[in-house]
Length: 210
Image (cartoon, rainbow, N blue to C red; front, top):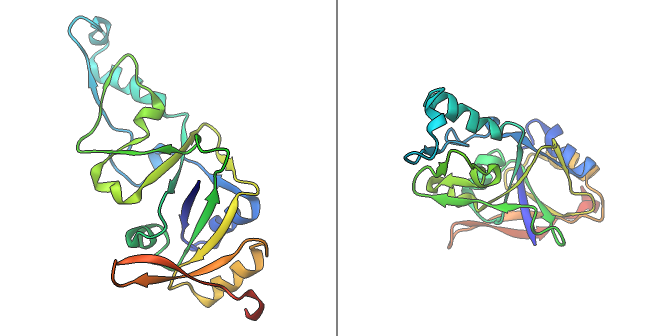
């Protein structure tokens, strides 16, 4: 099973860290770009949580959401072809997409569900992984899977399968990539499919002449 990590090359160091150190950076959920990230409605059923009112509902809700604080997230996509993903996460097609092989570790990236509204949870039993794999339907184009853990980095040693170049990548960044990407990892150019309005893999990049 393959997933894609879209990366801007501005600054170059973040993409190069993935390639050279074979690891994915996992960010605190509060740093993600969705302002609704981690938000949810809390349900207090009649008589079930009388203690919740002793300290006040707001205090209880904050305690509940603190469960998310230790967890870090790395977002991946199941699809290479979405134009918006290249625009938003690969610097307007000036960046790259890194294909990562998760064979044997298929259960580790968790699939994100897209809901019509914020989810609801029982105050006493919020599950962090469940909370962090729910987003509103506005984000469904991402076809997102998430690595959720407490560590800052997730190893992908030996799992980078290919690198895909954005159509607008600069010659300077192309030369930098050519220097750091091992020869065992193929580099592909991409092109726009004007019939289906999506991004497709194009040609194998000729590294000998660049």
